[in-house]
Every structure is written in C-alpha cells, then in structure tokens.
Amino acid sequence: MKKCSKCSTSFECASKSPGCWCQRVSVSAETLSDLKQKFTDCLCPDCLIMSEKMCKLQHKSKNDMKKTVEIIGGGTVSHVRSHLAITAPAYGTTAKTLYELCKSHSDLLDVNLHLTKMAGGFLETAEDVKRLVNEWKLDYNVKVVFFNPAMVDFDGYIANELENPYVTPSGKYEERLKSRAGERTLILTPKEKIIKDIRNGRKDIFLVGFKTTCGATEDEQYIAGLHLLKESSCNLVFANDTKTRLNMIITPEEAKYHVTTDRVLALTNLVEMAYLRSHLSFTRSTVVSGEAIPQHKIQCKILHGNLIWFHLH
Image 1 (cartoon, one colour):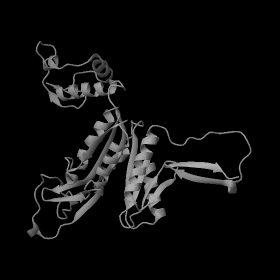
Image 2 (tube, rainbow, N blue to C red; image 1 turned 90 degrees about the vertical axis):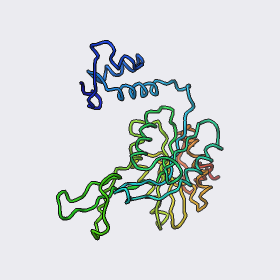
Image 3 (cartoon, rainbow, N blue to C red; image 1 turned 30 degrees about the vertical axis):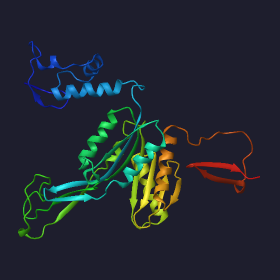
Image 4 (tube, one colour; image 1 turned 180 degrees about the horizontal axis):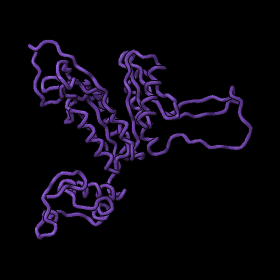
C-alpha cells in the first residue's frame, strides 16, 4: 500500500512488478513531465487520471475550440438537516435572459447555461457551484463568466446549549431535529464568497458579477456594486434593487452606465459591454500634445456603453 503524493489517499501499488494498474492508464509525455516536477512518488488512480485531463486542457491549442461564455443562475441551498435548510430563492430568469441575449448577439463565442435545481438545472449547494467554478478555471477556453447564482451567504448550525461543543453538526444526513423538543436556536456563520476565487490565477477570464440591494438609494446601490467589483476583481458588475427596480452597470473606472428601470434594456447593454470589453474594443485613451481644454468646454456622452469625450466649440 502507498499514500498518494497529491491527496494522501491510500492505494495499492505494484510498480515494481508487472501488471500494476498504472500500466493500463494512458498518460501523455507532457503530463509525465509535469508530474515529475511536482511529485516525488506515485499518485492514486483518481489523481493520475485527473492530472491527465488537466494537462490536456492546459496544452490544448487556442484554435482547437471556440472560446466560451459561461452563465450560471438560480438559487442555492445550505442543508442544516434533511428536512431543514437555508435557501437563497431565485429561479434563473436573469440567467436565462442572458443566455438568449448572448446567443443572439454573435457566434464568436459558444454560450453555456448552468442552472441550479431551483431554476430547473442540476446544481444545488455552494459546493456544487464551487466544483463548477473549478472546472472553468481548468478550461482555458472559458473567456467570459456571468456569475448570477443566488448564493446562501451563511452556514446554519443548531445551538446545543447543554453540551459541548456549543453547536451540533449540520448536513443533509445529520440526525433529524424533533419538534417536540421545543424551541431551538439557529446560529448563522458567514461563508466565503465563491466569486472572489474565479479570477484568482485566471486573470484572462472576463468576470461579470451581480449585486442585489433592497430599498437602497441610487448612490448606496452604486457603492454596494463597486465594493463587489473591487473585492472580487470583477470586470463589470450589474447592480439591481428589488424594491426600486433600478438597474445599473458599474465598471472598474468607477463609472455607472445604463441606469434604468428597464431590466431587459439594461441586460442587453450589459451583454454588449461584456462582449466589447472582453475583446478589448471599448474606448481607449490617446494622449496628444497641446494645451489643456477648460473644464467648462468639455462634454461627455455615453454611446453603446462607452464614455466618449468631445470638445464644445
């Protein structure tokens, strides 16, 4: 028996004898070279197969496949017990709209839609979303990500005031709670935000985040969206308020565009901006020699999501 150099799982190894299982696994020269640099001993079957898949993705020619747009939406669940869970309800309307808008925009990129169970898909928990994000990070054909799931921001634990530890374990398969036991206290602990990890190590991904407020002023909504943009290294943030119905698109240059209550119009412009900016075709600055123009003679105009400055004569 050996322990895997990568995941520490125990597995049978007969590398010094003929007929070992590893002889039946096809591994490329690129993968072997990569493994020799990272590990000094054998890997288990799962890690060896996964390493080969990762290597194929990383060495795939840029021209082998189209770049992709990945869209994810819908609500998620955090299980406290099999009969009790914390949910972030959402049914994928925005993600489905984005999918149709991207499909009709152009055929430059392949578009993939991922939905949670709440929205008619297969994903359910934050762990499911995290696994999908990890797959994107390994796939160098992923170019644009619209990250629009409603994530449960907390884990929930039932307080156990009479025993140590103070909280009981949570999970879908933990012991069921009994209502006859009376009132119980639920403790909420914040979860790490998955969106913050998407561009960690993958700065080539163009990331569009979404921020929801409720009853915020326009300035408060903008500040909340800008905070998400900076904190998560987003390229764009779409901020909407569920009470005022106001929408806006926030950019790294700390500007807000398409401030409107027309959601479809705002989403249409979001797709347009994402496609243009991800292909580096948004407004660029050119420095020219000459005297400065007095501020009162400068006017700006927004055209197709781009800020254009021109001189008033």
